[in-house]
Length: 142
Ligand SMILES: *[C@@H]1O[C@H](CO)[C@@H](O)[C@H](O)[C@H]1NC(C)=O
Ligand SMILES: *[C@@H]1O[C@H](CO)[C@@H](O)[C@H](O)[C@H]1NC(C)=O
Image (cartoon, rainbow, N blue to C red; front, side, top):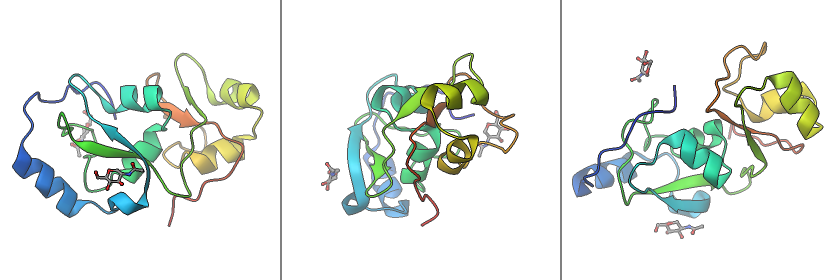
């Protein structure tokens, strides 16, 4: 799950430097930045900043771990990469993919394309998850 875990309050310069070193994408590839605040968790950042759960993880590969347990207060993270920054998002809540696609006016294939973490049958979405609901297609594979 990409949620629920509270970040530690102490910022470690060493950890920050280590995370920048391991980052797959550099600052010049980032369309939008965000500075981590006390109490932030990834899915809450995703919801407030309109960056899907997948997009936030993808834009911070090598920086944020798989379960989002290593956010550091004051750390600058990337909300979306240049050319693949979906800002049309929705929080799953009690909804399902059929309702989400109907509301967004997009086919299921578009939802699945833009949210590669969602399984074909849409069986693995969860309430705090943030999905890209854009009608445009974003290529997260490159
Ligand atoms: C994001 O932050 C980095 C590091 O401070 C900076 O180099 C970059 O220009 C910023 N990008 C945007 C889009 O603000
Ligand atoms: C992430 O959390 C899940 C569920 O708690 C756990 O099974 C999994 O091992 C964790 N993954 C990592 C990389 O820590």
